[in-house]
Length: 338
Image (cartoon, rainbow, N blue to C red):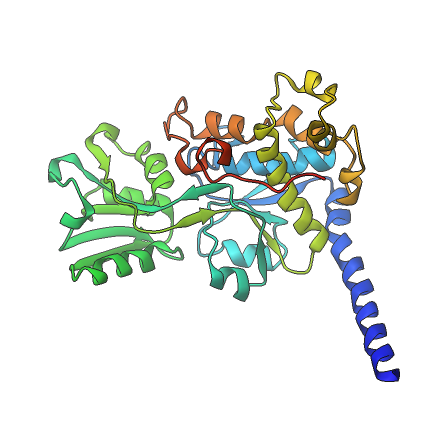
């Protein structure tokens, strides 16, 4: 009995210590007055600065949503541009509070880096881009090709798996940054550029003659992309998850920037819980009751964010595909607020 009691007391002490640690990061963020967000060094549609240093993109809007939920101000974010190689170290060291940088969720990253994925903001897959004048219509015709890729990413392993499984020869030409990789491809230093399909569409905008290049139809991998936080900050982890879930739930329940004021008045129980007119769900996260209202007011729902950054009417022109809501044949699905 004494041993059981002692074990219980030790566990309770650890739990109390963990709770104190868990609350620390949110308190620190509030005290300094901004969220430090790790992003790419420039990937149009996802995270990219303009000539005045203003950042936009799908991943950027997630960071803005975090700031909106905490501060009721989406501008209270500072951005740290990171290479693929440096991104995890920056989060592990505390240089950034959240990493929102088109990062693939894998088992090893989830278990060996001391990091947690908050969810999947974009369902992607790896593909290939090639010049039209190569007269190639399928990745199965790429035997013997030289392939430009970025180090520190999952793309190198995926390429190896694809070619070796089919006994096809290939040569990898790797570079540290995405810009170096696409410049090398544009200069003709390799035959093919490979990355996540979303990134292929994004980087194609940087080529000298965009229309001269095509994305081949094959998708050779699963690339579920999402934001990350450090292990041990459970409250911060909860906030990171539920900000993403709020964006998805808001689209499913048809809460938009335009109709937000009307939806707040709704008697629909799901809307009342989501928008804070019933229950104390925001307070359970350490936020205010109207935390979702703040997010939608300043940033919009998931569908609005997708469309303006990477959707069919954006320069990238990407169809929703797997990123449609589950109610519309896609994979985007969020736990309920209740």
